[in-house]
Length: 106
Image 1 (cartoon, rainbow, N blue to C red):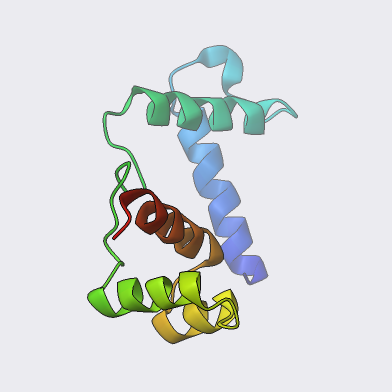
Image 2: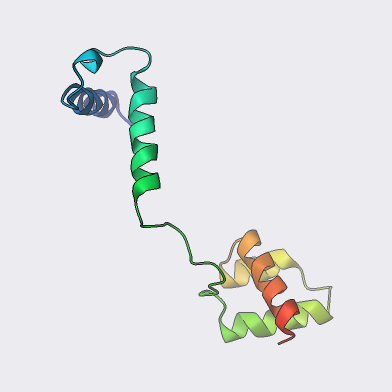
């Protein structure tokens, strides 16, 4: 980020803090970032929206990836990294899919 962008962000954060309505918090102090981050955390906690995938959702598990995982489970000369690169999934996602296929016995 350029210096001008950083200054703009600091100014916007100061404005948000200044106009928050708490007279004792009208000046920037070392505790200001904690106050702002606490407000953000409280807002996220109060929200009913959740980020990320729903529990148990296997949206990237294509039939081709499922077949490759079955081959991987039978032939351990196939490497996980090759499957990750071929299908564009992360290591954690691949491990989750391997577990799901192992449990279901597909």
